[in-house]
Amino acid sequence: MPDIWELPEGQRVNVKINNLYQPVGEESTCLCRFIGTMVRKAEFAPISYLNWHEMPNNKKEEMWSTIELKFQFQLFDSEEGLMKSH
Image (cartoon, rainbow, N blue to C red; front, side, top):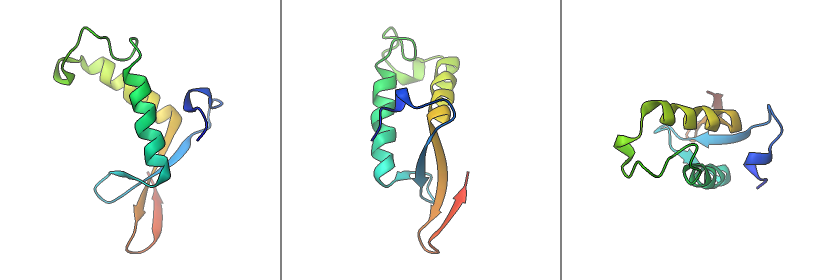
């Protein structure tokens, strides 16, 4: 997988999600690794918050916005074999 932080602006990784909205497939690992690198960056997740519930909502929203810039999510219906854009 390419370095997600270095993707050109507008280019996103397509991640399939199941009907429970859980990431599935090879790209799900890429998403998990990206989130892992993001939460280690102080500008996203300051170390002063030891508990996720204490993290201010604006920090959580900033992380989600960054994820949406780098990833595109598609619902994968495994029973019908269809993919629907989300």
